[in-house]
Image 1: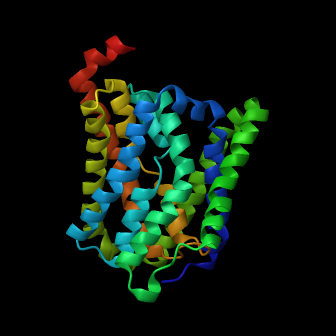
Image 2: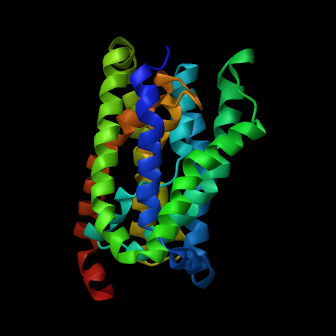
Image 3: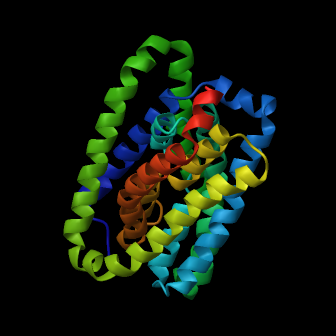
Length: 294
C-alpha cells in the first residue's frame, strides 16, 4: 500500500496546522503547574506512558492483529491525549486545568516516546527489513514536524494573546477539514482493506478505549486523587490524539503506511461515544459530590 499523491500534499500541511492549533491553546503557565501540582500530573503521565502501551501490546497479541495493524494500535497508544478531552472533561465537571497541563506536557514528551514505542513495535511485529531503526534523522524529522508548529503556536499565544484566541477556533475547523479530506482519500483508496480489517480492529479499539477510560479513572481514585482530577485523567487517557496518529501513519516522510492509520481512525469514532457515556455515568453516580466540589 502506498500513499496517494494528494495525501503527500495534504499531510504535512494538515499536521502543521493541527500542531499549530495545539500550540495556540497552550501557555508556559500550563507547564508551570507540573511543579505546583506534581502528583496528579505524574499519575496521569504514568498511566499514559507506561500502563497504556503495555495494555495495548497485550490486546494486539490477544486479538491476533496483522503486523501493520498492531503497530498502528501501538502508535495510537503512544499518542498524547486529544485536545477534545478538555471539552469532555469540562462537560463532565472534571479538572480542566489538569487536562490542559497533561495535554501540554504529554504533547512534548510524546515527541520522544512516540518514535521509541513505534520503533520497538515495528521491530517486534514487522519482519526483518520492514522494521525501521530509531534513526537520529527520524527523531529530528518528528521534532521539526510536530514540535516546531507547537512552539510557534505557544510563541504566538505569548506575544499576541488576542490574535491567538481569535485564531484558535478557525485553526481547529481548518485542521478538522484537512483531516476529513485525508481520511476520505485514505479510505476510498484502500476501501477493501478498511472493510476487511474493520470488524477485528473495531473490537481491539473498543477494548483499548474502555480499558483506557477505566485505567484513567480508577488508578487516580485508588491513589486518593479527587473525583474531578480522576475524571480529568480518565478523559485525557481515554481520548487519544487520533488525528496525530493518523497523520504520522500516512505521512510519506514518516511511516507511510495507510493500514497503520486504520486503528486510530476507528478509535477516533468510538471514543466520542464512550467518553460521552463515561461522563454521563460519573455524573449520574457522583452528581452530588461534584456539585459540592465546585
